[in-house]
Amino acid sequence: MKKIILLLSVAFLFGCTTETKSKQPDFLLGKWIRVNDKPDKVTYEIWNSDFTGLGITLKNKDTIFKEVLSIVSINDTLTLKVEGVNAVATLFKFTSQTDTSFVAENPGHDFPTKIEYWLENQQLKAKVSNKEFGIDFVFKKKN
Image 1 (cartoon, rainbow, N blue to C red):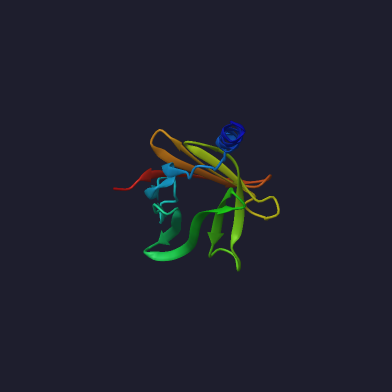
Image 2 (image 1 turned 45 degrees about the vertical axis):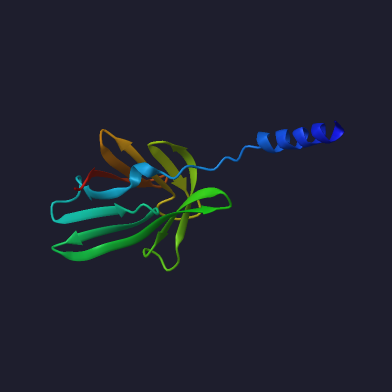
C-alpha cells in the first residue's frame, strides 16, 4: 500500500509541473508585400514555416536592403534574430506576446531597441523604434 501511495504521489508531482513554452507566432507565416512604401521602392517580408525569414527592399529591381530573420528559442525565451544589417546578429528578446502579436526588445541596441509585429484587419503591421523615433510598416499578404 505504501508503494502505491508513493507511486501516486510521484505521478501527481510530475503531472502538476507545467512547462510554459512560448508559442511560435504563426500569424507571420507567408509572403508579404509592404503597402506603405515609397513609390520607387518595393519591400517584401517572407516568413517560412520554420520561422526563418527574409526582409528585402528593391529600388528599380536593385536590392538596396536585405536582412535575414529568424525566431529562435534562447534559454526558453523566444528571440527575434536579425542578421545581415550589422556585422554580428542582433537579438531582440520577446517581452510580450499574444496569438496575433509580439513585442521584442533589445535596450542595448541603438536602433531599433523595440520591434513590434501584429496582425490587424488581415494586414501584417510592424514598427521598429527607439525612444526618439519609429518607422511603421504595413504589409498585405502576397498570393
